[in-house]
Image (cartoon, rainbow, N blue to C red; front, top):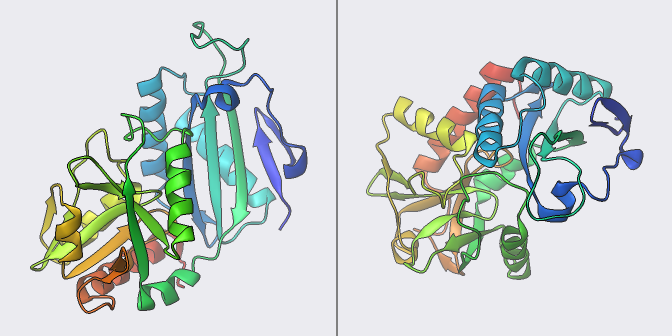
Length: 288
């Protein structure tokens, strides 16, 4: 596929895509982003991502660069130009460009950039059958993790710590020893047949896939509890799993090197994975 990017009204080769060196996204991570799955050439859960993007822009006082309808049309055009079938659409909106100063002036024009890159969603099927490992790390992020900003240094270091430990993901643990979420995923456990995930607070990103999994669980008559859980409870759980746009229900079989349950993917995760793949097929026609 060609590699084309969208930057402020222009579609250009990815290698030529650029923003001003004084763009506040570069200088201060003063920006928000979304990652949307493209399956069978179609956007998955577009309304959820567009709604969250608008909400996050509002939280930071960044003007919406275009209407949701216009953004959707622009995104779909970029996907078509890239001839993308299975890919990730990345959307970033910054406050704009101005002389470097912590305070910002009113009336700035936001910068909108989008890219499309291939992504193999079918790889998740094998991972769902085998499961993955996570490690726990201290949660060193800022206080508004419910806003999907590009200020991801703590997440980057956590993900690198996981890679160094041979794990797929890092779970971010607060001073109270409760798990907030993964470096790039939402966190879940299954205890006594109940699906448990941390509640939506300033420590937790309201994942679009998180909402889809709760809906799927309710359809399967799996009870869901949104409440905190500690690392010790997770280690003693029957099952654990992670979810995100790029990780639709991935069982966790080891936490900090210790097995979860019998160390293999459990039945609740398997049922949820099947329901989510069915949901994806309905929206996009994609079957892994």
